[in-house]
Length: 137
Image 1 (cartoon, rainbow, N blue to C red):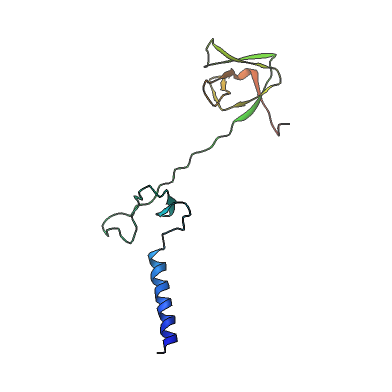
Image 2 (cartoon, one colour):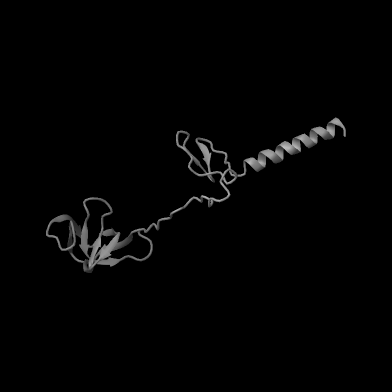
């Protein structure tokens, strides 16, 4: 075997060893690899490497929880005036809306529509609203 072929074999062997050892490592720019993702440098990775896991233990898989993002629906005030309340059936008024104004409805409950996604909450009677279909101008 010549020196040239020995060098090629050595390079190929080192490439095989490094790729099999780093199959789960990522190229993290700002952090460090952890499992199939990246974490901050000061954090501790708690996901075991499958190669280092005990044969009797179950594989530790990352759990991804997805939340459903619900966009608000656009409604229009259909009565001459509408007073928003701090809660359904409350007498405390938090706002005033005129006919034709558009509002975002985040939730409906028992004939009331929540039109504020932050505190304090604002609620309008649902019968004073009408859904707007199509694009808003």
